[in-house]
Length: 107
Image (tube, rainbow, N blue to C red):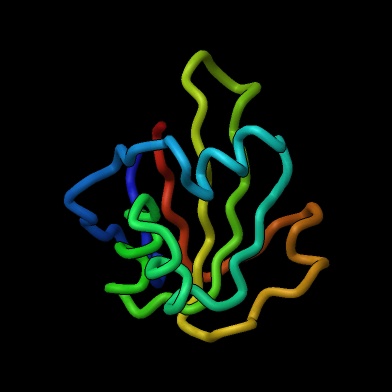
């Protein structure tokens, strides 16, 4: 598993994040895409939102979390993020998916 930004590999330094009380957990529990239209203010709402802190540090403004649960024994979340706030619209949570940056997270 790896991360990519602007079509190039990007090192996050961490690929596993705590799940409890996070949006990653909410996405997996619902089994549905989760849209975070403005990332910068969200990590301050909950100290458990470590992954959003990482995205904010990389100047990501908007993200969509897609649960990955049926392709293997280890659940995960595929995250697409962009530097533009409010860039993703409701149709972006429906297939086919096309995004700017992709972050895979094992939980």
